[in-house]
Image (cartoon, rainbow, N blue to C red; front, side, top):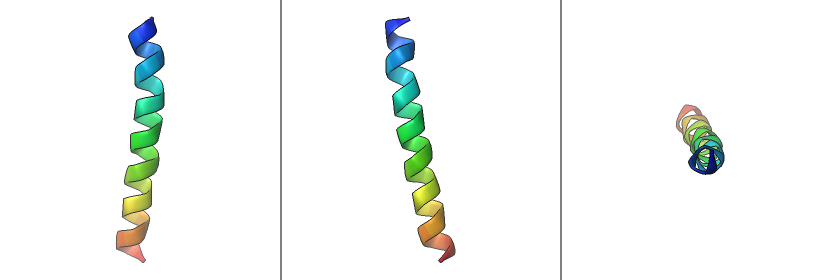
Amino acid sequence: MRSLGKAIPTIITFEGFFTCMNYLVLT
């Protein structure tokens, strides 16, 4: 349960970073 609570924010951060990179590439 503890690792899951730590993994979720990491995934969200990675998703946001990946989306930001895609946006920069598309622009």
